[in-house]
Image 1 (tube, rainbow, N blue to C red):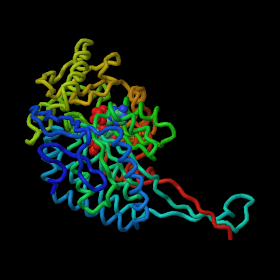
Image 2 (tube, rainbow, N blue to C red; image 1 turned 135 degrees about the horizontal axis):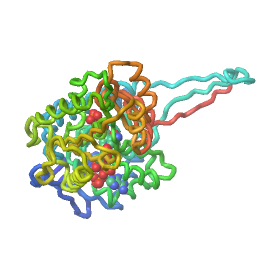
Image 3 (cartoon, rainbow, N blue to C red; image 1 turned 135 degrees about the vertical axis):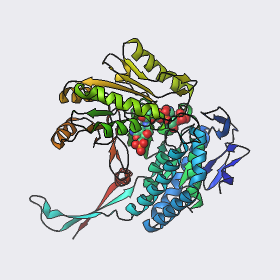
Length: 482
Ligand code: NAP
Ligand code: G3H
């Protein structure tokens, strides 16, 4: 069913219901992070074409917002079914393009179908309210404010390479059910997977122009998109550096940002250490650590540190490394630049005296799972986000020291606390400056109807099905004077 989106390995953009090539004929090659083979070429859209696309999106939005919500929801449920029906195929496309292990790729696609379906249903249950004037001191009866939520207009959705299907859909679906049109700018590496998602919505019967795509390097067309006068909301997921840049230049266009993290797993003396070790290893090394919510540091009480390190070490040694198409956890990072950066953090930790427990082995962009003990505050790995399979363990002497270390990070996405004592868990959770605290589990985004947010350099605004729909609508009040 995806034959229209490409010809001869050249992928097109969805514009006004049709798949088209850029008039400039400029393309960008995408190569496999695993073996460097050519995966395909995507369009590098020009600024003139961007103008035309936004004009089309704006016109399409007017009709879409007049379409009854139950009809919008039906189209979205159909899209979810198409995604489910093609899950195996799409998982292969995804796994090939971003070197995500095939099991995680399949789970990303299926989760996305569930997300779209749930969002369609949630949208049909969003209701407004009526507020009476005499609630306010001194006011009489006789006025009623009818408050409903209306769409914002054109949503610019920008997604990252690590979840190109799910983190595109997590913007597109809530925007659509709310009555917005969407311009999707997918990551350059990951675009082919995201274009397949766009075709899923197109095939489900989404009216022409309600979802358009724009491919091209963010460094070249990003600023033009962000500052475009047709944009009514920017919904961005990616690095904190790009997110902050967007926030600076966006002016009065509302922005929702999901950015980087340095999530801490805090392990107390009474924790079930075996369960904590399992959770920490799957949290730190899944998809080679390329998750915003990966465990990116462990803060463990000195008294149980030896035991925890030994349990984590055994689990890390069991991790399978290799081909994305096989049942493995560790695959090559997205590119050599990413691997070079991770290597600088590893080298810095070794030079400053951290204990290398496992790892520090590299083949091009493949970094083997690496574990450090006795990491100290002067090491970069204590503070920076590697976005790779490297985990630093920092030993602490008290709960308050763990809280202080966690809070001194520039990031504030999530944190985990492992303990059997709920009083300690709540004490810590209340003091951590993060969006979410997980008690006895690794940090993670899902289930996707939970609120998902970051503080400080980790983001702005709240996502999660209902919260995303709210973020992509505004209140409209009509006052009835009786
Ligand atoms: P990135 O380099 O910031 O890129 C993200 C997206 O922004 C891509 O589509 C990119 O396009 C585009 N972009 C780049 N420069 C732009 C500009 N000036 N204007 C507009 N768009 C621009 O991030 P990434 O490497 O793909 O993703 C990894 C980062 O994302 C990590 O820091 C991770 O923690 C974070 N992340 C956060 C969450 C969360 O929910 N908090 C989820 C996933 C990832 P190109 O690909 O064309 O450059
Ligand atoms: O990379 C960021 C994703 O939003 C994290 O999702 O916790 O399900 O891996 P996840």
